[in-house]
Length: 291
Image (cartoon, rainbow, N blue to C red; front, side, top):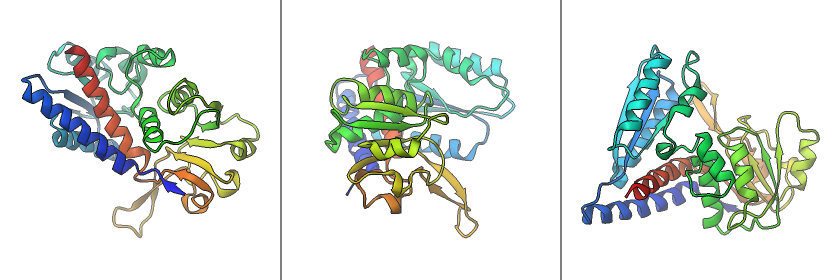
């Protein structure tokens, strides 16, 4: 069993980006500038955005944080999105999800300039990804593919079962895993809440990507010997005995499954760190394409 160490790989990627940024400065070029917009006081979102800002500082990016109150209207947020679209100093930006319930997330994401959509959520970028054209790939699926490549996990001809059909992870990773090239060429089954015989499907899988958000959903009896396990789930489980009052749990029963897997991602420390690394990679690409 080999741990797919997302923390190590993400640090390697950040070091590679930092070297490129240093070279850009040496040449007198503008360095990448990433902006993040957060509305409200969601604890997980604040933590996540904070880690992105710190990562920018580490690798030499410029960064801007726009923190808005919970009471921000949809019109006010759309106005800010328009300003970021028009700002030539900003190479890429993200609008942190979830947004308050009174704001239409889809309307906001549709308003983002696709050329600055480093989250890869805009339909233009999703469509280009599906057609294998140059674009921004959603950071989490992008991170999974990069992890598989760097550990040289064989995917060609394998049966991949993706659990979860979200537009952010499930659907894009199902497309990427079936495309030609490294970390692709697999036969993909996309499973969801209406899928029948899910446990049996998982037992047939050479690769399982679980993006369900249900703690410990994938058990050892659902996994065949030698399977590759990619756990995208990250759930805060309340636990009064811990200092923070919770612990982080993935979709996969790690202790039960690890001895059957050939490769497995831990939670935390697997897919999560890769997401931030690939967001930074997208921002670098945005700057390079403009240059």
